[in-house]
Amino acid sequence: MATNPNVFSNDKITVTYQPQCCVNAELCARQLSEVFRHSVIPWIDLDGAKTKRIVKQIQKCPSGALQYQLNNDKTKKSA
Image 1: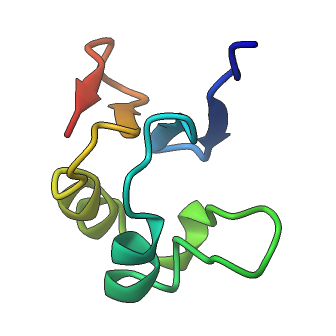
Image 2: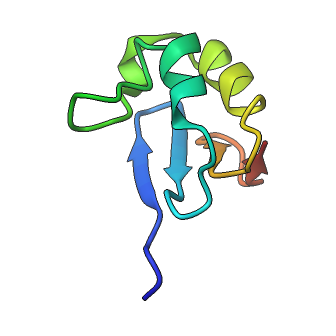
């Protein structure tokens, strides 16, 4: 059964998370714990850091499970 990606959004950025692709969620939680929280729901809090920091962390995603789109830009970005 396919799992739909989780979608998180604020006025600046939309982030999708595909848990079935994730190989190391702890990496994000350790490096940017204000946004990627492992013991709190919702797991991703986009108000926890500036958008540039969130984008930099997503770009480090080793599996591509995290992707983002800047809301003023129609092109989808991935790690």
